[in-house]
Length: 187
Picture: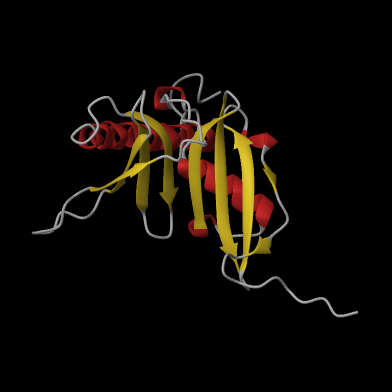
């Protein structure tokens, strides 16, 4: 009754989570705009095709394609503003001809944040959300999240979820981490 009269706390946990998620998405949009400007210094018509965030390091990778060519560029960062250190690192590459270009990514359609996806993946995988790396890209026409994390000892867990509904997230059984030999099975 107090909330109907305006005397109570109207911002419950769900409203706080929504506000945090909206702020995180806005931060992503702002960084993507900045990374796009940086990418267009090398590829004037660059289009964002995926973005990844590594929670352990706090670093982003924005990947861009140049329409009509095999040219692609990754924008890494942002780095702390230190004298002599660039805010963004640019890596220009050629996409192999047999690999088709990814669909351009429209981040304004994003409904979830990296933090929300990492939390959802952690709850399903047994990993820590702080240990997650998360990628966002279109997969078969659907905006999809690809969280992954290294689990101890030396295994990798990968998950997949549509942006529209994180409740549909599915995680694969842990795999041996890259560079690690698979476990030996003795008869």
